[in-house]
Image 1 (spheres, helix red, strand yellow):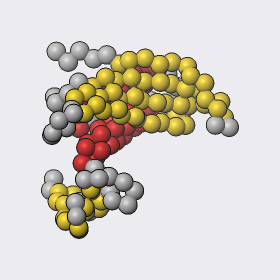
Image 2: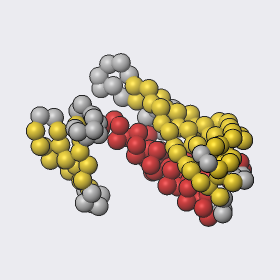
Image 3: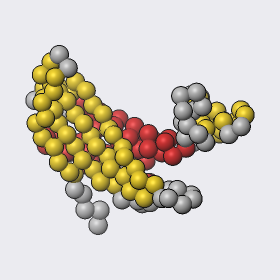
Length: 154
């Protein structure tokens, strides 16, 4: 893979990789400036594992109506202000979604498929949580199960 960023002005850049899709990158992130580099790392981690998990749940014929992966990352106070830990939370809603299917999808993603997770877990600890909601229609959801995914990496 090849990627580059091109300077626009101040500390604003436009980045692109092999796909050709352009992303605004800025030191002070915001809707007009662009995404900050550390924000991109968090989004990349969430996006990578989300693609795996939803794909696996679809193959397992789970009736998912909404799905989010949330990331909360703590950063060091001093430069280079790296992530020191993170919590990934998978939030699944649907009709009769099986907890075992969700756990297996998460396991496969974080242990086998998600390249971003595989890289960043070497740099900081990542706690993995999940919540499963029953979609009751009209925007109403009822919490059915929640927990923490545990995986021994040794």
